[in-house]
Length: 351
Image 1 (cartoon, rainbow, N blue to C red):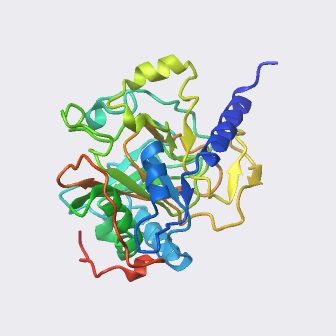
Image 2 (tube, rainbow, N blue to C red):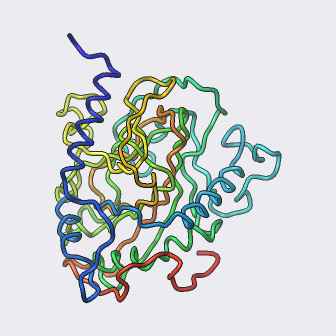
Image 3 (cartoon, rainbow, N blue to C red):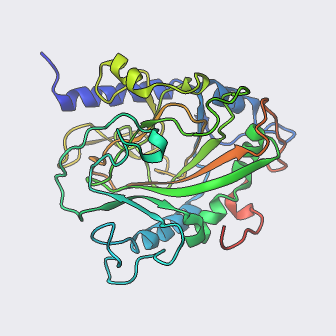
């Protein structure tokens, strides 16, 4: 009997989850006795193109970041992206900024796939299902420059352990250069199509897999195989990839058979059924989020439409790249065996 689409989707999510669990590139931040990032972490990172750090952010810090996130999202334009006011009739947050902070799109849409947006780096168009829950005409999927609106976010990105990892990968001369808050509202959140980050170094004669830097992503809420980011392991070593050709070769719609989901720390995983009363399975007894993820620009799916029924997935993401574009990997010594963002050095209120 041919499986239904929900059954096929559920099987794909389960198989990807099992592959991800077996990769050996997740766990806590670990250091050697002399304070260096543990070499097993760096080896796994360079081999696969990403590493998932579990429970990096403590519960108090996480609660502060969630509160700031809720307050921030309450100030989004409403009910359309072109509205001059938020849902309470106030001028939306950032109306007076040079760079508009709000990226919004219709519910469950793919606003970039198959278009010239972002220099055409999302060439494949994702499925755009019809929402089964009511919502505004446009919903937020990304907030730019979010550090200027939240001291809690700013402290997270001053986390000594995360900065130690950045230096271990890039060397001491590196530049954090952009930051965003990604949002996936349950039943409404738009998708982010398959793409490779990085734009300017694909033709560099000294190209290497670390030349574009990497993303740090900190989960404020748990992500699942259905709602979270997927990655094609090892694709960071292949240079610029023809994504449309890759998808055509896979012959599996929007699915890449060898891809894996990143976030497995969510306390529940939707079973892949259509929207409705959720049926869930326990995955972990540990807290649902506070995990961080480090990713070179491999081929990755930002995420699928937000058909999940659990609370929205939110993640802070920051790009970091070497200032001098090194072509070698370096080590770093950190004097702290256990650190938190509360140990960070004072940072300016506006980045």
